[in-house]
Image 1 (cartoon, rainbow, N blue to C red):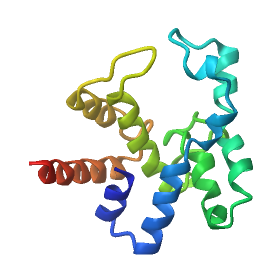
Image 2: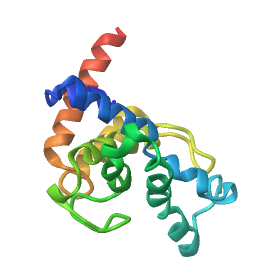
Image 3: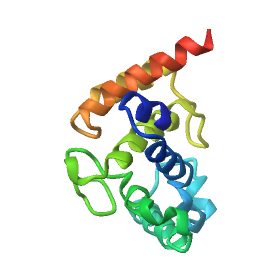
Length: 160
């Protein structure tokens, strides 16, 4: 989905490749989070949530040793930031969040909402889409939400 958004935005092949790598490795740091937290069926405690919020920086520390990921570390680190601020790990907002991180945030959130998790059943696609739209300019960059809608409709057309 991230690549489709990048295509809608007219990304070059090189930029699409960087976006692809970043999307593939965006949650690499979860390898450093204990399974009992990742697979917990109940609401996370504040302490557990603080541990989860460390995964972007853990991912960066793992991926910084891989040459082809060097230019993508900011994307990995900031894909859990919120467009209006208040995300993690740094609480940055708006255009201070790398564009590719803002793209991955939308695609990842949509995937998370529509996928079954240990603690809940996935939402129907329409409900997840409505939630993304509801969070325009709050959690997500509004222009990128619009690009996501276009990308999603193109993918839907290819399914038929």
